[in-house]
Length: 196
Image (cartoon, rainbow, N blue to C red; front, side, top):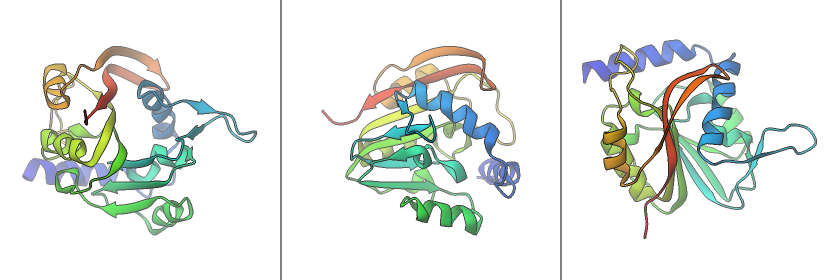
């Protein structure tokens, strides 16, 4: 898919050498809150998430996965198609977070407690397949995505509430964000169980 290849080149260029990710990480504080993740202060930083021994797969977490702010996981992994600088991969290794260069459409994982995805589906080849694969991979999906935004070179898909509700077999919450940590636009988010 030519559009997706161009989108990946755009995304790789957008991240550059991944040395200044502060802006994206501040947005992730909003995403995490919307996804039902709770921060606590450990005496050093107020940005810690205790995941209570769960296994978590982050689909498309890029070089600054929210998992880097988590503790007490049994197992954690990021899958993302982007080529990461060696220092980013070492950071994940030191944090005991696995990393695999892979598209969400190619996921064959199973046995995870949770899958997380945030601000990713617009960048994929086939967002419906990514969600389907996440539903097979974990008992629960935590998701945050922007909806009703126009497509462009970096975002070949326009997501809608209707599509996401059907794919996720549930109803997400809709909220218009007006600048919290530079997050502006119509957001769709929620927690979606995948197993009965």
